Length: 494
Image 1 (cartoon, helix red, strand yellow):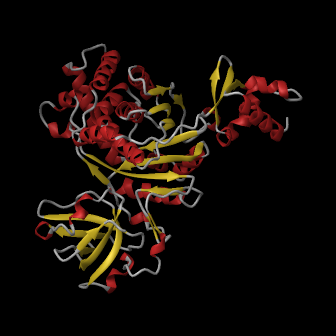
Image 2: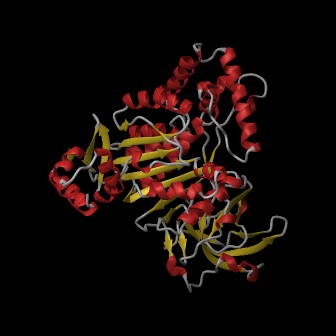
Image 3: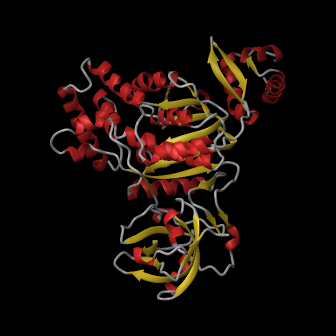
């Protein structure tokens, strides 16, 4: 069986038919060949042919991927979504599904004191395990999954909706997208996609998911699949059981528009050094040329900087960091020292979270703050903000701030944090890809003017042009501060 002949035949048949059974290709081939052997041969090439295959009745149904248009959120959608993000709540049907899952697992009312007590214990054990093991948590038992639903899931659902909506605003989400969520847990990313599709007119998705844990897969089947049936915008396929440390590429979908690794890459890396990069490489081979990989991790120092390092390593293997980091002067920043995260308005507690938090030490069971680090990788070389032409410009580099202490300078840098200060003093971390030490833009409230208040509304990861800012060195924190005064201007680069 000649591989070239097989691929030529697949290409010919797919040009004539929108879908066909793989077994029909056997009629074109000379010699004996089993169907599974044929599938193993063609699977790595399906994405390059804009095809994908689904197992059906002992055969493989090969389909041509429809090239939908990129989604353009209209004004009404955008206003409604921004209103949702200002005061996010987990949809009522999803909350009911969480509660129903608990009742099915325990045989008791979800709010039964004994059930709530065991969920509280599970949360406390998970938090202790997280700090003891450096961020790794196992979810092997039913109550640990219930603890996840009560404590982590609300934040992670809204967190991913923020990331995906940001990508849609940039025009990089197709009206119909094929998505793979790797390490899905109980399905928080699919739930986020389902909810966002219901809020974005014309947005639909085919959602695939990979998970290792039996308990998580059961939760996925009892929560995500029913949720999808109630929403017309998303088709959710049964979860694929697989250990990402030992992936089986032939069992994964091809021609993907989006691959999601939320709270996964660092955990893989901690389990086995280099595995995060290997999994990312395996999954990127399934990505359509104009698709994206989203990597998201918690905002704490260890996980955030580890994620940045892994992402920057990926940028040396054919992938491009689209965002949030802009491209300055063609340089790559020091990822190991890049503690950068975004903060969003908190999510409202679910009924389940409120019930778990009722009583003593309630603060230990409330988790509503949305803070996370993320990166978007692409194959097509696109970047969100490109300032490679700054080389040789008159704007100072942050790497040279030691030469400008107590002087006023002009710089262009990206705002790489949310508000870190308070009402009296606004503080933002900034970066231009060259800094050897942390750099912060400091704007005292009494210095805010129409000429510099743009700093207060710069989108995370977007650049700003700072003029006449005073350089200070903070010895206590070994960092540089750029003091924005009433005589400074902060504008969008023109």
